[in-house]
Image (cartoon, rainbow, N blue to C red; front, side, top):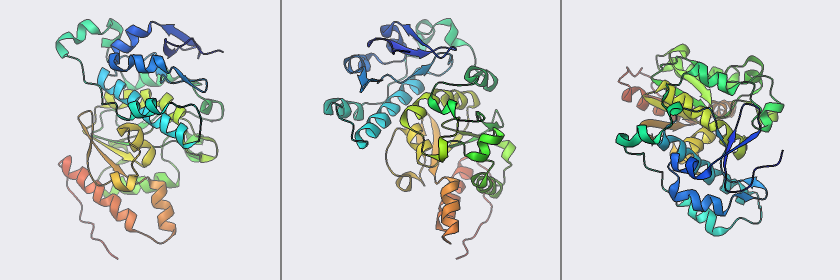
Length: 317
């Protein structure tokens, strides 16, 4: 199906077809007045809509969270296109997107007037999963066996966000059940917690073929659902496992080695970037345990912030 004409808000409906709505209303609602002209001036790059697809059924994602993620997704998307050598990207556009500040949240006193009634109802993990359905919003839906939504305590104080499902996860429909999952379970147990006490999910809900890296479009398509999960759970701390989760949530391209070890802010929620369990698995195979200790240092900071006991794990080298 042909994409809609430029200058329109892009939404997926349940039939996986484009539905058009007034772009001025959409951008105003999402706090995008300052970005509207920019996005309408460059609606497509090489035939791909620059407007990040926002799932139609996302009633409780706040203005600030949603619009901030779109800005982050735009940064990631443009960077990936530039790195791929694609011609035709205006340098002024890339520079302007890179300099975009995070939108400010609206005045709470006027929020009720700004929000349609449908956007004032509470969300739930069950509803988010129902809205996902048998998702075919991107090409990952055509190759996966099972959609991997998330697992754990729906009221968890701590949420782990990974990259995407692997082969074992694709077969079982649950995140982190393979070798990387066993490493994550060891980390959770070492923290004095149980897997069922935390919540575990991924940026993308379907396995990329051959365990390749998720593409920018796939990350951007899944991201609104991840944000709904986070806002519904309302965790006290988020741990971003690896570069993709960190880049998606923080809107940065800095290496994970530079970002880990220090809390970052995700709309008022402390976020700790750390190495992905699959990276630890690889390093363990090389006989290098330093990365394990780096992750443990990160997790002790998480425990202290949650005011939980920190088990004594002395480094033995």
